Amino acid sequence: MGKLTHRIRRSLATKLSLGIVLMAVPVFVISVGLLFAQSLYNLKEETEGRAASTLKTMELRKAAFVSTVETATNSSDWLIKEFMQPDLLLELTRRVVMLNANVDGCSITLEPDVLPQAGRYFSAYSVRAGDSVTTVRKGSYDSYAKIWYRTPKKTGQACWVGASYCKPFYDDNGKLLGVIATELSAKRLAEAVDEGKAYADSKMKIGHYYRLAGLILILILLGLLLILLFTRKIVDYAIRPLRDLLEQTQRMAEGDYSQQIAYTVKGDVVSRLQDSFARMQASLNKHVSDIQHMNEEMSRRNDELAQARKLVEASVNQKTAFVQDVSHQIRTPLNIIMGFSQVLCDSGNDLSAREVKQLTTLMDRNTKLLNRMMMMLLDSSDLGLSEEMKSQKEELVQVNRIARESISNVYAQFPDSSIAYATSLSDQFSLRTNKTYLIYSLGELIYNAAKYSDGQHIILRVVKFGKMVRFVVEDKGPGINYAYRKQMFVPFTKVNSLSEGLGLGLPLTKRHAQNLGGDLMLDTSYIEGCRMILELPV
Image (cartoon, rainbow, N blue to C red):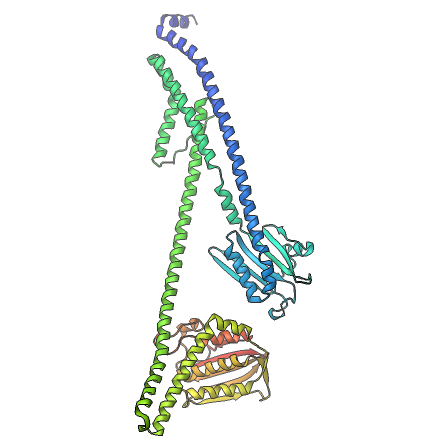
């Protein structure tokens, strides 16, 4: 101890260093402590203010989401009672989902036997899937046992069940008709809440710590100027962690986040600054990861948009091709009719009765062909579909009489054809169906058989198959190509784009058959030509 005291006394640099340090330490410690305490106080006040503001904003956004869902549900109440039809109820649930971005799904479930024409049970449901909305009718799905249906039915009032707003609706006599349930979009609500995250708090903390670090650096520099060379080693030791942080932050600025800043167990200011930088780096890593995820999601969305654009372009091209094809199909019989009309006008009495009959027969055939195409186009439109859905399906129709009438209609178009008829049913056997659509469907099948086969080996068979009546149209010809079979019931699809026709015959026939409660099928086991089977319920 004596030697050490003697050395200090003999060394002026050591005494000055110790004297300066002894004077600077209290001032430095008090200044840094006050500075740090003030920073913490300011940081706390600002953080609490921002947190309160963010919380209030989130509550307002949540209330807006809830209000939107309730308004969309309540505004649909009178529409349900006004338009109590299956198709309109399906469209109503679809409109609720499409017109309200905060809604993920909408369900309208009716009490049993409210809509007899739709069956005992009816439930319309629309759900958002990405950018599209899918609308379905639930079959025998037991909605009545679900809590979202039982709760409003029991209380008689609208209420929230989980994320769904459920409301019962009644007729003018107070009788319960059903329940409408609208599902809040949890994803949209989460996105709205995420938008309110106070990321600024992190930036605020970093800014305060940066200012605190700047003041510390200034104090250290002043200390360095006062101590100069006498305290160089001490200063170098004191700022070594800051130098390490500087090197790491420089690597971070260059995009290298591989080396993690270590946390310390010391409690000094420099150590806390190092811990702050470590937390900042972790936060930056998280944000960079989130940004990468967002970029990947945007890339996926761009791919989906590109695919959707291709589908739209394909649809536009298909529409253009269809318009061109329709124009050609209509122009051909029109030109024939106009040409023969001009021949009749110009020739006058120069033509023989046989020639006049031939011309008028050709004109009549092309007129019927043109009328057939026009009726197909009308039938394939929304108006045609609506009329079909509302058509009477309880007409009592004699099966054999309708079959023979359909064959007679085809003979008018193909007089040289040979069409046989075989039936296992009596002439008094009748079906309850729609006469117009049945005649159309049978006529279309026989027409195709006469048009695309040799026209001499066509037969229409009628048999009873269980609870169904089968109309089997069979011919001997090239049949239907295997590659075309998957698309044969798709509207506006033809085997050959240059062939006659609109590509609507089989699709419309299948639609009519299904609307009448049956179906249209291709017998793939028949290889000598084509065999189509039309089934209708007895």
